[in-house]
Each structure stands twice: as structure tokens, then as C-alpha cells.
Image 1 (tube, helix red, strand yellow):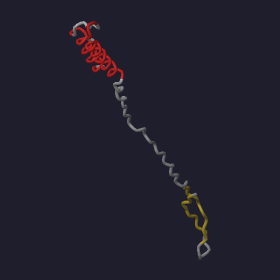
Image 2 (cartoon, helix red, strand yellow):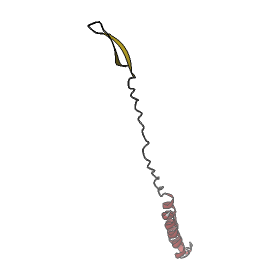
Image 3 (cartoon, rainbow, N blue to C red):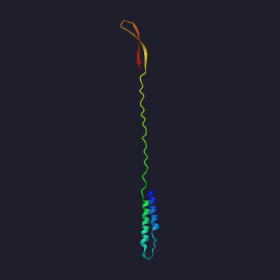
Image 4 (tube, one colour):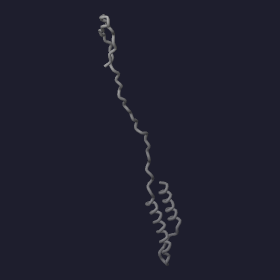
Length: 98
């Protein structure tokens, strides 16, 4: 935008400051020079490269890692009968895990 305004002001200043060009008496060089300068100014405005694109930086997406739930074995206490070497029946509590 600054380039467009600046070159427009230069063209306007040259157009107002120059003497009126006439084609009589072989003074065609002034008219041609003014035409060339105006063409160069307009051509440079049209050929200017576009502004660079705006780069938007975003934070990376959050990654959620789901851990497999560690399932502890289910343990219960059961009563089991046991016969000792003397033939006595003993009831013991035993922890049984599945």
C-alpha cells in the first residue's frame, strides 16, 4: 500500500511540474519522455509482488494416551478343610486370587 501511494505521488508531481508538451516544431521528445515515465510508474505499480502471506502458528494438538487399566486380581478369603497327619480336621482361612 505504501508503494502504491508513493508511486502515485511521484506520478502526480511529475505531471504537475512538467511543462505542457506540444508536438509542434519537432518537440516530440518531451511528450515521449513524459509518456515513458508515466508508463514506467504505472508498470512498476502493477508489477509489484503481492505482500507475503500471514503465517499463523498454532500450538500442537494435545495427545491423550489412555493407559489400559490394570485390573488387580479379585481375591477372596475362603475356608478350607485340612486333615493333618494325626487325622484331625483343621479349618484354615486361605486367600484365593482369581
